Length: 73
Image (cartoon, rainbow, N blue to C red):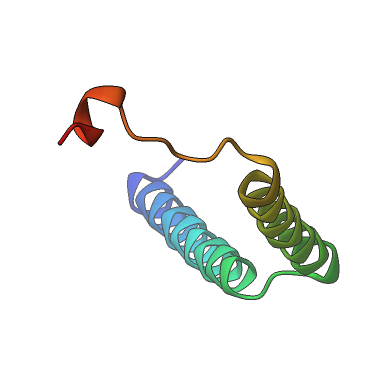
């Protein structure tokens, strides 16, 4: 095959691959900033469980006490 045509074919294939990589990068960036319903639901559920756990720790946790040596007069 003619080396000129072969070189042109390789460069065209490289251009197509770069364009596809850029497209995939843009799609990944868009998807990262626009979560779906399931992701939003799981995020809200996670935040709710964290808040619930913190309130339970405050309610049922051990009260803080001072060391006996600190209370001497």
